[in-house]
Amino acid sequence: MATTLKGASQLRTALRKFEPDLAKELQDEMAAFLKPIVKKARGYVPSEFTPSNWRGETKTGKWPIYNATLMRRGIGYKTTPTKPNRRGFSYAASIANKTASGAIFETAGRKNPGGMQKAPKGTPRTNKNFSHSNNPLAGSQFISALDNASPLKQGNTRTGSGRRGRYMVGRLIYRAWAEDGGKTNAAVIKAIEGAAAKFRARVG
Image 1 (cartoon, rainbow, N blue to C red):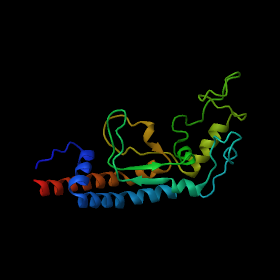
Image 2: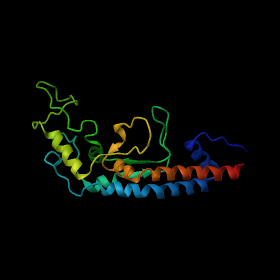
Image 3: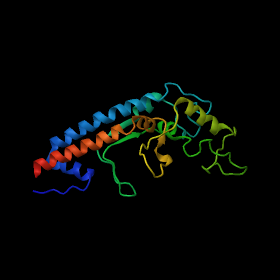
Image 4: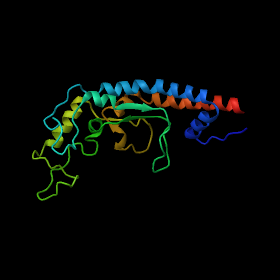
């Protein structure tokens, strides 16, 4: 019986269906590569981080409290393929930051490095394009505190020409990924290619 494989997701589906032992072996191998990145990213979460504008929940409860333990637990990996994105691409494995406070710590400042502009007088507080703090320097002070705790790093380690966007920039996962220098990415790809070769050798 011939099986045509068009990509990693198709391979994983075929392995689970026809060669579950290879599927388990591949998952274990990928997990072994991803765990050190997760551990390193968790290590960048400060045990204490209490700038004046991140003391706790707001009256509305929409601003999450800083809880280092929960933030570390929220950083984890998946060795199952992601759902296709809007462009039709999926990822064979992923590392994610699941808490709101972790996401703030990871990404704040990558769009507006100096903080958001103070809202002009009369701007509705529902307008999220401006800062509504009474302190005009609140945004820049907050981001400076974050950068002092863990600097933003470009996680896209691709070399050569082409634009590298801000969406791969961060202080936790993306920093760990950047400092890894692409070694884990290459190892995961090699593991998938190895599993594909074993699969083809079995099914012919």
